[in-house]
Image: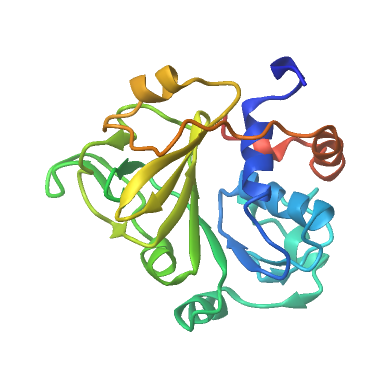
Length: 241
């Protein structure tokens, strides 16, 4: 399959989808269009018993076509099998029963620290960010925390974050260039997307790349691309790009 037949948003969505397993309980928050579509893709392709949780409280919504409002639209509740409110999601995670949580951040360093609070000095910041919100609870307590970020540059992946909003227990970070895996207390380069290169990842990362071997993320299959058009006709997965 040639690169021109898919986009970076398709690669990221399929990559994330393939990280999810059948029978896992998975949560996404607001402004999470790409992982929302990835969860729907997983349920449609290889994980039919995956349990989809979200901000409105809808369990396993049958449709995401009208969930456009910050990926928290009424469609996620109106077409759901059951209701599971947000406060119960945090309780579920703290009891060790939430398998995967999709979370965000602005800065990341090689030690797995996540900054979602400020850029610059905390008391006199250049930019004040939204803060940890659910990340401060879910990253330490979910079994697997997956972060996606549609920007990959040296201001995002830094030697040391300006402020540590939360740390540890990361599993994967998926960017437009690659996938990082957190292990042994460090971020390791797991795979490079077929639309990128080692040199591009290296030149846009503010810390030394650690890796065991150079691997490439699998290309989206024809079946995945067909399913993406079916379940995401409004292309929510690309909304952040």
